Image (cartoon, rainbow, N blue to C red):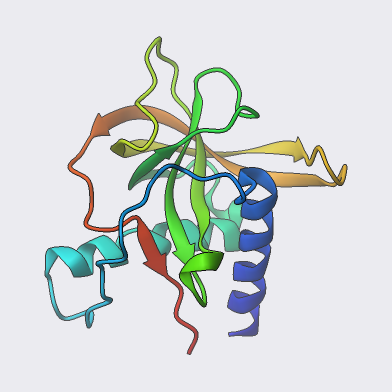
Length: 168
């Protein structure tokens, strides 16, 4: 459990540094998702459970997932610091309260002339890669998971952009 908590803390730190959470994503949806027991197959339960089980293991063991193909669903987040043909497929991770929610997911490279619109919801299939980035404020160098997309498809928006990290 300590390793998972450490990994989550590092994920949040990296996400905050990369996404500068002080800037709004423009997404103002209210938190409508409640985490249902795993046995339920409701849409809300799926929406809450289909993201973190894909994202967290990659951040916990990036080397073990390099080259793996995954499909992840979230909304499109964009920063000026992203390169051409890049966006983040993301959900807002809540650890303790909504004010601390941070965009979490994968910066994605999509080789096309047209990127999906910011705040639109997409299903991205791609290969997990990594890249080295330098934080412009601290100068610290990080290895970041990076998704090289083979397909980006629009999907209906989920009821909520939020996912909830539950500590045991």
